[in-house]
Image (cartoon, rainbow, N blue to C red; front, side, top):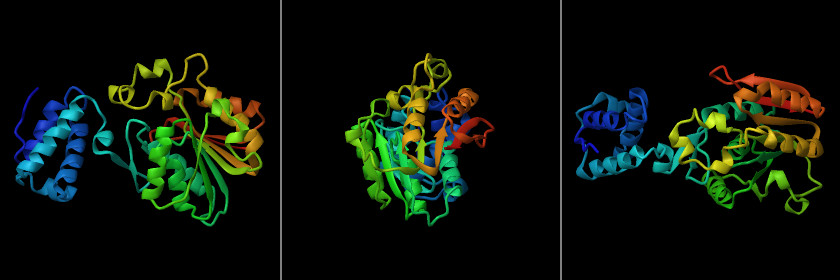
Length: 291
């Protein structure tokens, strides 16, 4: 392992570029370095860029080294720091939950654009993980009642901490959508919005993924079998058939490779106005449907 000096801001950028080269390109390494320097020094990004000869304290250098040693293993920066930002809000993250992605922000935005801010609606987020979807929706739809379901007790603990961090009230449910027992939820309740970013990564997809995802993020929240890649979408669609209110909406984040198949599955189950939408990168990544 190289032990590059990190006395100045310029030194830190150089060290991070060299030592993260096997994992990240120069632009990614620089972005990581900038985030870490901001975290360690408390300086703004503008200041750091403007003063590359800024001297970092010995204590700061030690922290920068320790963080770099973790990053070299492939551990994602968000797990190393213990937090990330999603839809303008802070979220704690750890290996029990997926790291929220920008395309999921687009899904949240779609839901918000489909419902006025004063909507007193019932929302259910299935497979909530860190709680980023449910919490962001509640924060922007304060009159809504929001439930969030996950199979993982550890994920729900993190999601609950994030709800407290963002000062919103979420009703959490520990349950498996593939084997849902009526005793775990209110069978009388109906939802105006059901939303989910369920597991959808197939073994074929896994071969193309970065090791900082496959080696560190929770597999139960990521992977499905090649034989039945839509298993969670089918189960959630069946649940929605029973639990969506009149004119209710179903939202999915999807595997871009199965956009048309997911649309056809929903149409076969008699969902209407099934809309497949591309993300900012031009990939088929989200669906809205109604009954």
